[in-house]
Length: 365
Image 1 (cartoon, one colour):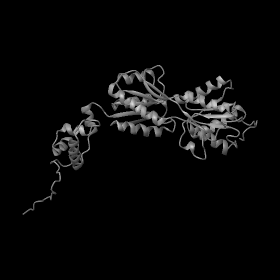
Image 2: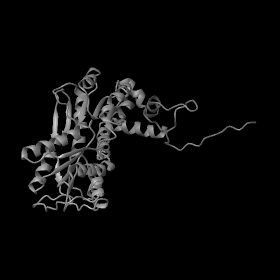
Image 3: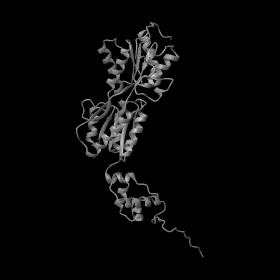
Image 4: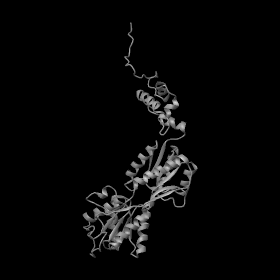
């Protein structure tokens, strides 16, 4: 005679509803075990929804007992929201962006949504990823890349709220959070000029980077206002090698070491500094000042201690997500632009006080 299998049960222990082998536990199973409606279960897992403490406790206990995990895809069919926020950013963007992504992700999560990241090889490639963005039916987007008027209009046509991050929408009415790159560059030139620098050089960022071009424009504008010679400008790619290559090009074109080299970002400033000190025998800052932008963590290391400009990226990320959250809730409204200022980090790679010495010498090749 076959024995019956028996299962010992502890008093007061919740039991699972009978289900088919391997069947996924649903909110209806949780509702049955908790003794509440399925809609009450849904409210317990919806951030900000109204539910009593007693109901919430029963539902959570049942969910833990059943090892229940809410189905985001199913919920999106009901709410008609994906709970996804697209973030579009360039791989060639400044290296402080990992911090920005971390800040954006945390702020987006606090709104009960998840970040969906799209990366670009270059800002000009943004048209190639927009079709993917539409496929995911995102609830909103934070874009740290240049958009054409037509592309910005498409966000409006598809009713996808948009906030530009560190990009100016120019004439188009789009919400934006940005740092005044031109003003930061003018501040840096002013401080260097006050210390006696006269011949400047610029190692520029990518041609399709709006941030790089705004920084270069700020340098040129301030030098012109001060009546100083036009700088030697060479192209860079926001990478370490561009700093060293750029410095060699500057010296080759100028025929001597410039008074100051302003690099489009800190990683190029580090490349410029290493090449100057270790390959060309240039004394920094005695013979030549070097400055960058963004205040990367590495720029503050003792071996570098770069003179640079720091942007309030955490505040910018927080405000960008808050602005997007408001747009996703109420839609429309007058386009708002929030501008922030950079502040100078006075490292040891630039002379910011006193007149510079005059060497009149070529750098060692």
